[in-house]
Length: 394
Image 1 (cartoon, rainbow, N blue to C red):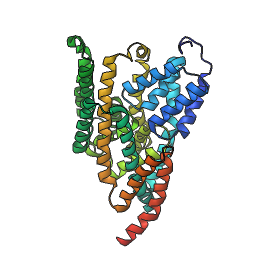
Image 2: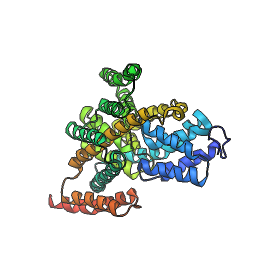
Image 3: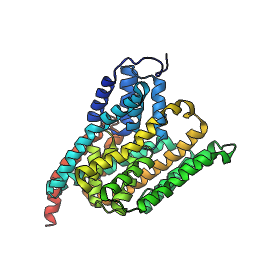
Image 4: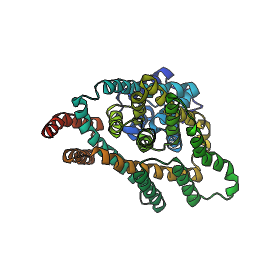
């Protein structure tokens, strides 16, 4: 079989863009599920993409920071149509859920004070904790396994995230280097100075830039670009990072609003990361939403298009793999820590605890069950239970 690049595509860019629009509109179930749909449809069903090209795209999406599913989509657009393909596919994939999130943001901003909206999120917030808990568990089993080194990285980040309630970007990079030096130690560490410089100094540069006094939109853009540039693994990995910045550091949103924003991302199809659009909308309206989404997805886009030509060459090297394993273990540790942080806020009484446990049990028992079904059921529960519970409180 000819490699994807050399052989002429058997499909048009328009066909691929339309497919990604559909996937962005109806694709539920988080990044791993979305990546699975792409493999099923584009590799097996249509045979537009070769298995080898798909695997390379997946490697890159896991190597580079940013939302995995969006990066994989962009890479698949890049395979035959280069930068134009990556750009068009990226927009098509993100746009539907972005528009939905804007609509929900508008409704939330206008009706957020209404008791029915609070009632919906009372149930949904609790079920979201269950959903994140389950996906953290699955990710942990899949990536950390029984590896002692990865477990120590994982547990360290779980504790740090829980205690500090924020995500510390340089710890991820450090975890990558620990994985690399332990697994595939380079023969000459001195030659690695270039990499050492670029990675080690990113947090410093980030710190310097965030010290500058920018307008609100500038702050939003910068913060979300940092989030997009430093978050590895699944879309949920961005949650603890956003929590630290949006709630703890900048006080843009209250904790209640933040949990609601994560819930909105769960209800909508497409990448979970699109919660940034909702957050941006609440902070600074439509402009805020656009700047937040652009800030988050631009690094991810650049991390896809620029290294794409090199993935074939270097993606399989043991050193690269070990570096990625370390970072991934750190990311999943942070997700698991953030489950605890968010649970502290959302599980406020017995009914919410029941909703969370029911969510975990349903996902455990029924592997094919889609998360939005649970989220909608939790919303209905909230609409019924919230008024009853709060009637007694007077």
